[in-house]
Amino acid sequence: MTEDAAPPDWPLAQALGLRRLLERASAPSYQVKVKNLLLPASIGIYEHEKQHRQRVRISVALDVADPGSFASEDFAKVLNYETIVGGVRAIIAAGHIELVETLAERIAALCLADPRAVRVTVAVEKLDAYCEAESVGVSIIRERPRQYAP
Image (cartoon, rainbow, N blue to C red; front, side, top):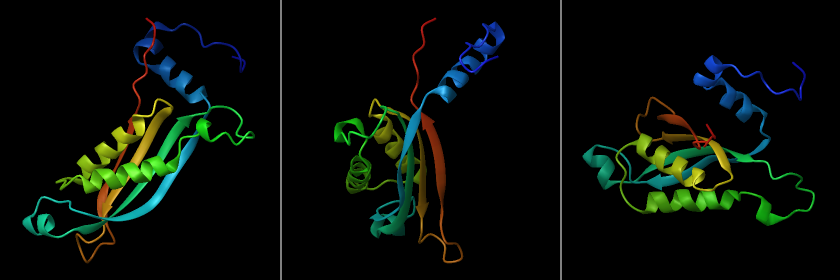
C-alpha cells in the first residue's frame, strides 16, 4: 500500500477499531507539556492528609491537533500551557481531593475540554507520602472520543 492510498475496507478491522487507530495515527499533532509542576495540595484519604497540605508533582503531556505552520506566531492558533497551569491550580484550590486518581481525571478533563485537544497523559505524584520513596502516584492516558459516520 502506498503512502496516500486509503486502507482497504476490512469489516473485521473496522469492528476492532483498527481503522480509527490508523486515521488517528496519521493525523498531525503537536504536544503541549507542563513538566514537574510542584504545588501544595489537600489530598489523601487519611485524617492527617486532610489536616495538612502536602506537595504534589504534576506533569501533563497534551497532544493537540496541529493547526499548520506556526511561522505567523498567531497566539490564537496554539493551546496555551498557561491555561493548563491555571486550571490545575484552580482544581487544587477548589478543596480537598481524596485520591490522586481523581486529581488526574480532573486535570485530564480540563485539558480535553479544549476542542483542539486530542489525547492527554497526566501524572500526579505525592512527594511526602513515604520517606523511603521519592514519590508515589499515578499516570493516566485519556483521549477525546471521536465521532465517526457509520
